Length: 122
Image 1 (cartoon, rainbow, N blue to C red):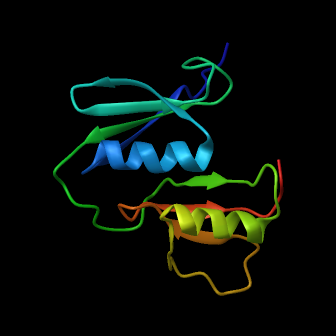
Image 2 (cartoon, rainbow, N blue to C red):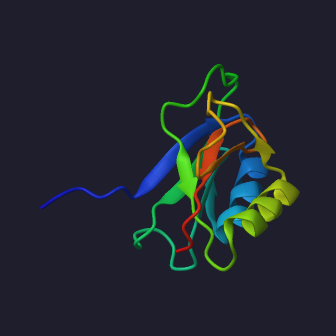
């Protein structure tokens, strides 16, 4: 038997703000709140095929590029239309040393956590 990723935990300064941002981006909902942390996930909740995201409060500022980041794919539109939607939701372009010919866009959430918008539609 193998393990499966059930949740990803991200330390942040404003869990409510990041939870709202990522709910909009992923179509998730808030599943719970505990000790200042906010857990979000798909409609079916914890334990489904997709891991949940937990935003845990921390006073420490983000200092450098994340060693682990989230990749997202558009589901019902092409990459450029999805990029416009993500930027309108509050994502900003991020530079992590890309050369400019990548097939993905590097973005950052409202607290500067990098993530990539991939080209392939799921």
